[in-house]
Length: 316
Image (cartoon, rainbow, N blue to C red; front, side, top):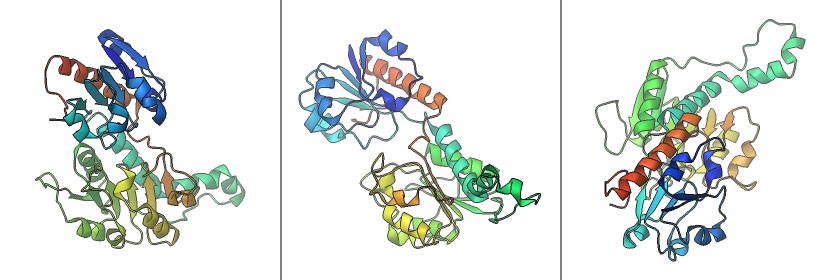
């Protein structure tokens, strides 16, 4: 079995691929440029990919390809319909990053709500030493207890965030296409009107692309904190940047972008070094335990496929 890992660098440099060598003949590519994809998968039986887009243009000559394993839960980079038409199986990994993403979401909220960047800078630049005053209490911050936390997307990650937010004393409301009985649910516009913190945990689909648009964002409270750890394209990034700069939103925590990495022309480039903004490089999913779990799940997906078992299949 020939296995190609196309973008191992996105999984970190500290993982062991020994389990793949137990399955067959893996070739580990740290990166694969768009014009190298066809060559790197030409003889592959199995392809493991994280961020690279796979579609008819680069799959059409992969004659031996039987299985694509996405090293993620989201699979918007894979043309599932084309894979179905060519009988190429596709698997993702579910639930591996729940704790990692929830942890970063909570960390962003706590940092922004407490103005930690500004307070630590006050100490780091010696302003505290030179002040002659024992403490500094501006900018003013508020307790999260008693505030309303709106969770947009109540899958595994969203529900974990909701549980932690509730433990912090927040009143949790959620938005979900098919509500259950676990938490109170609201329509999206109502959630934006009442929430003091909003975190987004939606997959990117035709239905969710741009769902958090200018009209929805106009409903947000002036001092609310908005966090997106899902996909950049579910939001109107230009509007978010403009609202932050005009003081129409209290803070932004963003880990995902419509273009990754984002270029100097991206609207968030204007927000660099802003103390009311926490921008991170799509790392929320990537705690060591999460990445290790992801690779272990991929191995199980490959084994299941070759046993004719259905496991995490996206094409059926």
